[in-house]
Amino acid sequence: MSDRYALGMQVRREVLGDTHVDRAEAGKTEFDAPFQELIASSAWGTVWASDGISRRERSMLTLALLAATGNFEEIPMHVRATARTGASRRDVLEAFQHVAIYAGVPRANHALKLAKQTYAEMDAETPAEEGSR
Image (cartoon, rainbow, N blue to C red):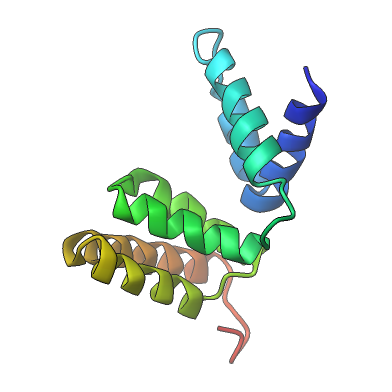
């Protein structure tokens, strides 16, 4: 594997967490291994590894782009990642408000629904300290 792939896997673990990455890796097959390597090298080893913007900002951009393009299946994963990227719930709301204005209310509304569900699951898994949200 390349250095870019190794960096990508490191960044992926930092952003998504070991549990998510271990589960994804366990599901990898010979068929999709080249695609998984592409994603690790390009998305995680190039884009997410860049220091051009903060992970908080990148997280907000990613969520807004996913919502704006209707790629809803990825939203819960990236909402969960905000616990590691520093994007607050307010940041996520602001990103989806931009989606509502520039890409459409129905997409933003659905993204908000998914975020609310995901935050409820996260809260149930790990009760937050009072005032930390």
